[in-house]
Length: 355
Image (tube, one colour):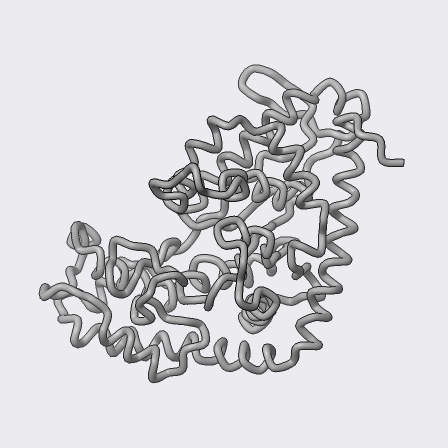
């Protein structure tokens, strides 16, 4: 028996333009993690069709997300960058996990309730089963850590539940095959094949909110372009959006407690802290007592400084379609080899003949 090899997995859906929330909440963390971990980063194109089956140009959106990964600083040679559909083992493991997970678990998923709305009977089965595919994305590589925002914590908890049930149900078989890791669950020691993946939630802006409504998450689907800063926005657009960001008439407080019931102020302070790679307390110590008319220009200048180079590099890489496709093809081959090694053992554990 051996321990699980530390490995980070995460993915981004290819739907619409990437924005500041995606950058601060995910992509910039991806870049930092590659300095300390082996990483697999995926454009999850299969997930993009769970809520919307038909897209105007899914291949272009997939390439755009890949270009953003590369522009931000992810190294596709040292780590793996690919699109999900190239590795069919994701879908194969998701089916097994559909048989492991319970319907009650899926019905409790907050994101399903939000996306399905009142007409839940008309939602796709894929939308309901989305978390099983997410669990498969992670566990087909037996990843030990996933960088997630606050809104994805519930899905990762479900991934852990699925892994724990699989390990428990097949513990004897895993032990007989000698391909697991001894794990403690409560007072019981069992043979586990899948790790109980841990979340990586860091930084002062793990959830970036809309610039027009501090109670709503910044979203690619918001009809107002002023609600978000797109990674492709130029300096003028960034400055304009921050200038027009909703605020309240009170000056910024000097302490965190003063942000209570001030969602827009809290959001802008968090964005500044994340971009400056400092704490919210430090931002408030610097700007406390000052009006937003003084804070917004400073935030705009910082945002332009940090984002404009990424946007320029993203445009440059996007123009070289052959390079982007080569990255995805190479990453898919390397990811596929790892995924197939896992699935060969999963088939053996479950009892599915494959040779």
